[in-house]
Length: 133
Image 1 (cartoon, rainbow, N blue to C red):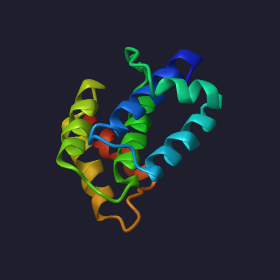
Image 2: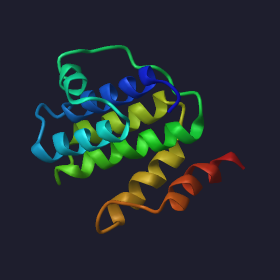
Image 3: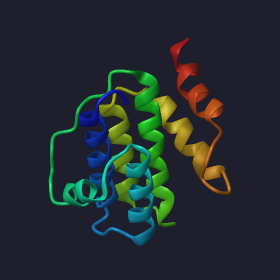
Image 4: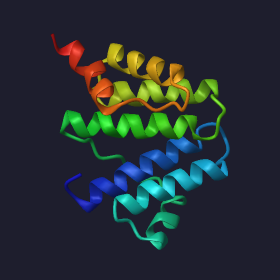
């Protein structure tokens, strides 16, 4: 992440995604707060983002877009319940980020097969790099 505005945009996108199923679970909130802290966002600003719906800034670097997609996918799994709206939304978000649909599908499948829904960074990046050939 290069700028503070990009970081705010990322966490805003994550907040919007977290409530796509109509509610915000405690585990989702905790996950969002952990990410916000890692991005250097203060608690007051983080809380204000729940009431705002700013436009999302496009991330130019593909590596950062992949990482943001993965964060969103982790968020989707954090409450232990997969809603159809979440699955549809994560696919739409990935495509809107300019990520390859096959890479999105491979990543989500690998996460679903993992006992803790996490995958190694190399496997994550490989899912998308494989599509470059």
